[in-house]
Image (tube, rainbow, N blue to C red):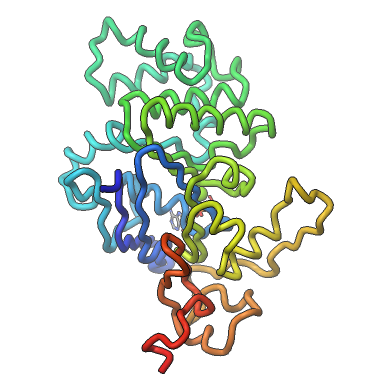
Length: 325
Ligand SMILES: Nc1ncnc2c1ncn2[C@@H]1O[C@H](COP(=O)(O)OP(=O)(O)OP(=O)(O)O)[C@@H](O)[C@H]1O
Ligand SMILES: [Mg+2]
């Protein structure tokens, strides 16, 4: 059984200017000791999907349908007090940009203390030890607990955020853009740290990232999103070497290749569709240029390319399938 199974998750934002569907029919599973990379251009719904899993959407966000199965519970349906226990305790998150949101006038230790205080039953007289242990896990000298965020490097601040997310010993850790705004060396150190923690605590990790280099090196599986939907899912080899969806292929071409650094990069022309003006049929069709006329009319199903490799594109539709006849 999977550690967590996401089934048909659909999320809307109900704003003054209208109702927008930011995530639609998202499905995936995550196993223990697995790192899943969630990729796609800005605005495709990555953070929204992760906040929905935590039931931490902003006020205007609504989970319209879907299930998130963890152990024997559906996180989308359990009463809020029960969800509060699962949140941080079973499923935890390092938020996008959080390392820059540390309170500048409080020591890092006191901010970790708050996480422990709020979310665990660690007795008061043992909290100091616990803070030191957590900092040690993430590679920050325990004595740094009495220092302020401005005395920390970017990498140390991100490590501290990871320490907070681990305070309740979760089974699943979501890291939303954990390496953005860090220099390349530090990015690798943070990813190495997540990798070590995964092995040490048998974590399942979801990494949201724009960095396909990170995905190639650290992720077992990759889920590519576009316009709120999953367009392709597979293991790293299937996505990097055998991708079928034109969007995935374009994403790869837009990213520098370490083995071929002089290759010309081809950015994807145009922009993702605005949520209030989604094209009929395939959402990538206006930028695709590969598919046929049917793509602008027909919403592709999710097709199995080979076992474990899924693609939502008419090009991946098996030849001679019933709908073709
Ligand atoms: N609080 C909100 N109210 C209304 N719309 C929102 C809200 N938060 C996000 N959205 C919209 O939902 C869509 C998905 O946003 P989301 O932040 O999930 O994307 P993302 O893939 O995480 O992007 P990025 O890579 O820039 O972090 C976007 O169109 C965004 O404008
Ligand atoms: Mg985001």
